[in-house]
Image (cartoon, rainbow, N blue to C red; front, side, top):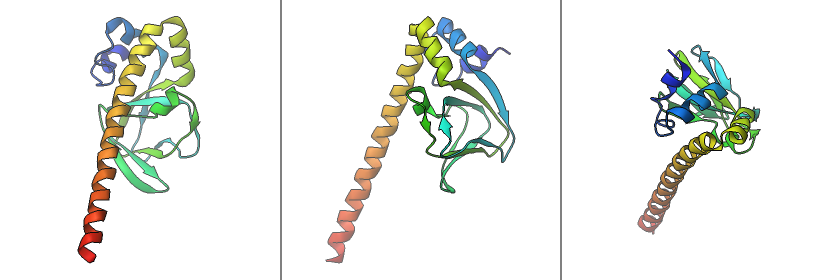
Length: 154
């Protein structure tokens, strides 16, 4: 099966269109990880976006598990905007098949086919916006709980 066919089912790329999808597929590569194998390490240079196609990975910071990501999820999206040190370590929990899109390849794609690169970036921004809204809701809930606890202790 072609890389484009594998990627067309990923939610991040479901709306980019077949022409753009083919170009995005050629810009990156498929990678396989065994259970326990580290995909990226906290503190190392983040220079690629990863899409989880199959399997499951765990995101951990300073050794503490933060999340598990399965098919349809992605991580490393900030590397598409600007390479910087990774904020967490990601390790395969199960045999995992990932698509890796390096920052430099995205930049080249943006120069040669801005529509394809923009289609991908728009989807990343939409997802980041959703995650930020959820984080804001969680912070608000914690604040409300703290207020309630403070009031009940008085």
